[in-house]
Image (cartoon, rainbow, N blue to C red; front, side, top):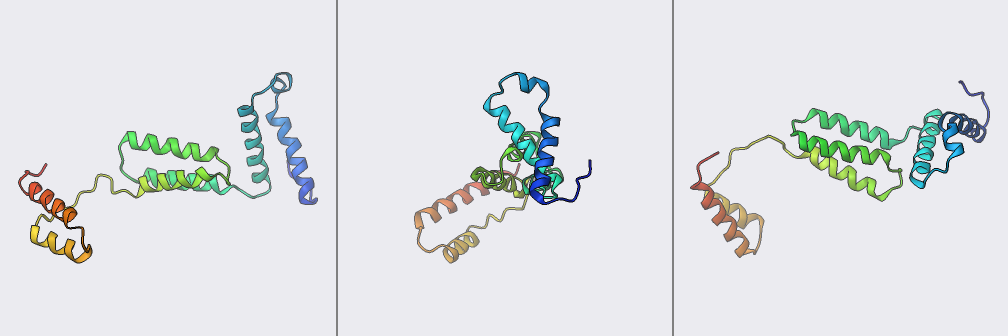
Length: 159
């Protein structure tokens, strides 16, 4: 249904009425709905209003972008399932939710990790000691423990 050219607040009212007709079937009118159902319906109304006004929420576009990036990487099914669950949770949050940034950072970290990529280890103790001394002042006990760990790795056959 194309909207007539009227001021924005009237467009919103027309869209809201149209959405109520679509989303509130007779069942909801005759029965009391709990808070979570009401919030869900109101979120869907907001999404529909933003869509009608051409103001698509960036949460949805961010979620789609994260899904595309997730599909492009080679991860286990368990990791993919967890990331998908978090992306779905992210979609249900409002734009102002503080949890949104935490979830986005978490999923982006999962995506950025070097899954199934291996590098060749350099187990030269003198080289490791030189790098540790150059980059990290002090911390002698920690550096000694790292050198011990590398020394043990030299004696373990590669997997």
